[in-house]
Length: 428
Image (cartoon, rainbow, N blue to C red; front, side):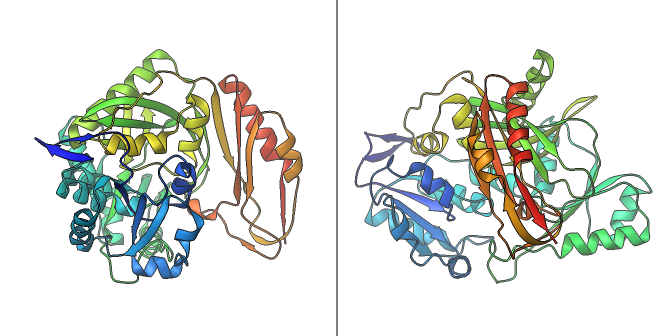
């Protein structure tokens, strides 16, 4: 049973009658908790347009843990709050979990309304809007790049001068619309504004009109890392540092990840301290954070931070390296249950995303060879003959991935590169 006493949630065992509300449908999350949470204990709240676009009408039949999907607006909307209260009146709610990036503010607001642990609505709003995050983090002493909100190409040109600049949406996801410009003139500023302001994600957003904001930022130089952290009542109780590889060119799409990152004590301590400062600055209370940093000559500088499970299979990589089940642990954390987490990794893990020359796929070979390599844990090719491959402009354009584990960073990096090299996607 769940009782609220002085705003602290106490959970007696795993109440079979309690439900976990997910805001946003995330199939990978549901697969990971299948068989580890009670049958029919999960209810998903999803946008009606997204249910239609992603053909989720029969999704409840795919997972024993999933009771149903309920349509309600949550993206830049508070409609789900009254629904959540109605659901809790019928059946106790143990936890509210943000299933997707665009669900973070709504999930935090609902948890707060129900008296359950969560990010807090104020923290979630800052994490969902990079302009607000810059303001809040900067005020809390976190190092940020120079930045400004932009409303057209003239603002980009005025901010950048003729120097390198990053142009990006403030409140989208998955590198959608993000561009790196080496130099800026009137033509490149106009082109960058057009590409950024018209970036679209058909299956990820509802059809109604939403509000998008845009930033221009100083372009930073240095190696890139992310810090994945579980936080309870404002204190980091587990953290991992991931080394990131990003493709060259105007679109900073991630090519691979390696964790735990092979870092010297100094840079590792600096990233850990920056993460603690970020948690305090944002006022984040309970949940998971995925913060991206560039290690500049001055120290870690914040790129962005998300208040939900990271994508790019990073949770799977953490589970492989640390022998954890982070998605289940997060539910327990958001339900106020005690959790046990390791202090160090048992091994290293890595992912490499598959690329192909743009065009029409004519053949895919080497998959079985890659799967048979030592240390390879997963191989997935997301394209097939007849399908179009586009140049990488966001994470959605990648053609698949390979995952490997090994005894140390150098060995694991080589294993995942060997698996990547074994697969050939031919296009014409």
